[in-house]
Image (cartoon, rainbow, N blue to C red; front, top):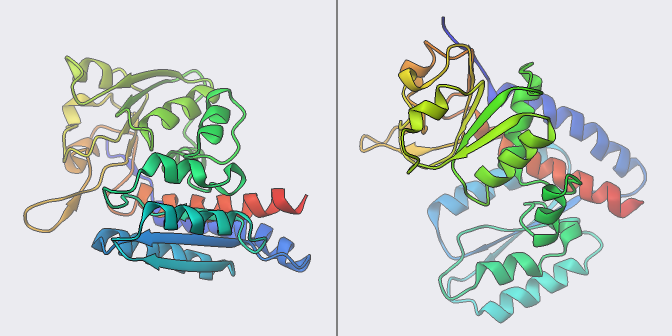
Length: 283
């Protein structure tokens, strides 16, 4: 068996086209969805992420503001900037690129963003809504992973889904989204005793640990759908996921590559959340 490769780039383009139609409908009413992205400091990876987000906005004809603040910016100054964006009717989505410098409390920053403009889905109000099954603005990476499963025709209802990773950004919200689709969900961590016992039982396996190639083909159930959220840089400079792709693709039914799998969907769902926030504001 050789797995069907889930092409995140192709699916991202398909999903973006759907949301561009909704953005165009808003623009016909005189409303251009707007996203403000704030970056504090000079982290090279953050710069790349932010540039890709601004580019995605341009592709869909959205208004975007790229705000760069120095690494020594006081926390109060950043919070004041967020307050101004909360009050700005041209801005429907606000994102502060993480990580922020150590002198800034990231929890305070995330809570300062209006829940209605929290396109990252990290505000406690939006986290609570997801927990209670009333999803408002969802965290972009797990939201994107769910779209990959949907567009690939992977059935979720009644299936056993195993999520390896418990982060607030991916693992926990991913488990909640799968639960909402009536999957039976098991959450594991990188420290789970006899991890393979759980992963081999998964019809759907989502891995988000940040440990390169920790899941090998012999840890995967034949025919399973494997969503690899990890992205790791090897000593030779190449990128790889948390799943050993070469061995896993010989066992799985579906699998996402790294790069080119979940990554393109994360930015796509950020744009989707911005359009959704603008639609809600227009009402």
